[in-house]
Amino acid sequence: MDYFDHIASEDETAYLSRWIWVQCESPNCLKWRHISKHDELDLDKPWFCHMNPDPFLSQCTVPQASSYKDSALSRQGLRVIYSQLPAGSLVLVKASKWPLWPAILSPDPSYDEYVTHDTDGNAVQYHVEFLGSPHTRFWALVPKVELFRLLPTNAKCLKGALKQSYKIAMEEAMHIQDMTCEERLKLCHFKPQELLFQATGLLTSIENMITECATESQSKQSHNSTTKRHGKINQETSEDGIGDILVIEGFRFESAASVEELRQLDRRLIKLNSLS
Image (cartoon, rainbow, N blue to C red; front, side):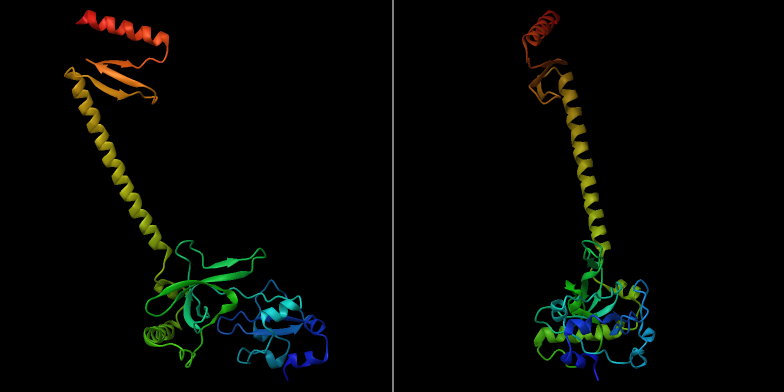
């Protein structure tokens, strides 16, 4: 008989408060078990089904007991904390109206992270790469993600191209099911390295533009120097960005900003006339 069959005869909160829900951390299990609070349990260490004091629930092959939904537990002041799956895990994801779809937990190419956490450090969302044709990506809530398993009748609602994509996705999942997480990550289409390559290409383009601008600037300076030697008049912008500079026969005359500067300019003009 299920533990929760007892709830009908007693207060739910009182009953639930006597138990602790723990999740087996074996990647091939991840079933939830409830154990008594009186049992010794180190929450800082991994927990597996074989550690369950209840001999009837001490094996991963035993089905998971039925439980309340997160919303029902929340009404009792309780909260489910999910074990964090490693990057590269093969999972099934429930997104919107779509059926459970095979995917790989992979880093978001924009942030190089595959999971977000709340203020308590608990996993909240996973970045997943959906298998199929084509591969797509999505941020899914943790409760919507579970380890991959065969679902032979899961795609009845799909038609046409989507049904074909789902078939391809399941074939991909079966092919990579026995791979390690690291091997699966190498097969992902959306990789942070691609952004690095794009950034490198962009930097190269910027460097080329800077080189072209520098070459053009040197060419203009060379042209200005030649112009001065041939006695032509050239007008430039002053170095401080205020006023103009007049160059005549190699002499530079800045626009005056005060009476004293006007006098200096006048003396330069007198000197120029005497030389001519």
